Length: 517
Image 1 (tube, rainbow, N blue to C red):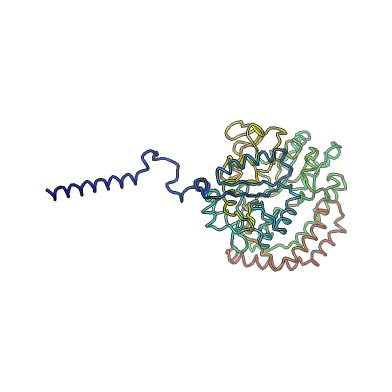
Image 2: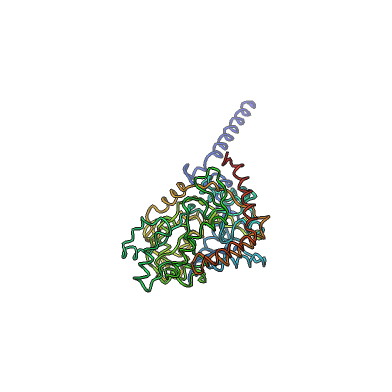
């Protein structure tokens, strides 16, 4: 009898143990099997993990970035709304500090020099906050694969792997996170639509800068209150050469040259003589605004609405809407004057200050800016009902003079999360992605010049360029007199040493990548 009871107890215990194991393996009974919730904490987004972590201390972040003009009096109102959201998502607040394009570089340098606190900044490869030179100065924090997988996995998943090598610095490390948008460059003329229609301009006939000359002549003769071609210190460079690859890239080579031989800047300068003569002729004819070499920001000129033609360096599908916003409300048409090249994803990026005390939380903010459509559109467009109205799930109508209009979607995060604005086609983002995929990928993709041994020469050449480039490009000086001086000063300042070093690095890169036999 005793053995029977013992056996019965063992059987009951075994049954209870089995039931407990089944319960443990279930999905808690009340949760649907197709729930979108991650099955464990490791699979949850960094924001979700942060919101569930009571010990996570509050972080106060600072974000500096460039904009074309003051966003408006409601900047603080929008900033406060952003902070309400961030507090819930990652227990952080951010102090937004917009700066005009003219202010941005000097302010960034001053903050770095003074050790002033900031966490997040905007950068680019070859422009404001220039990626490699600032890395060389130790300004930006390395963002490792481990950091990205832990704090920004969703944002990284949105970037095609084949584009990611563009983020590598010369040391093979990554110091920024790309703002995914158009990654193909096609230089265009931005022409006011009203003048295209009024003078029956066939834009299909315009392939280079030279082709626009008759139109400029017509405007000068027929529109006395209009600037035919607007140029400024931050907007010049109509020259293109479709036989070469290289504009906006680390170096140039001829399309039909199988050896990909490096074409030096001094050689290109010689080849541009006829172009400089044309610019001089246009300036003297009154096609170009007289203050072109001294006006700092082209948008200050275009905002009056009287610039018929200007230059757009990176024309993209739907970009005409932004053009209209800075063109006095006048519609504009992009007319390409160069081939379309894949220029990489490093043309716009977010970087973390190496001195940031909240690097991990800053990376979580980067993740949100590139994946959270609500936050992204809040910082881009402001508050719904006050600064814009929704037309439908994809389209919005900005409210005129609403108090907030930074007009810089490409500065804040993944642009494919943006609402479409009036004038943008429904397939704008699909066409942009297709452009990225189809653009010519130059042999220089992934190549960057290590400037360590030529820093002094580069600084000297920059000073020489500042002295001569805008003057020659705007036609405000006689190239017959100034071009020889320019070239002479470039040589005296170390241009040949720069070219020798660049060529050596390029030859090594070609061999390592198997670009030539």
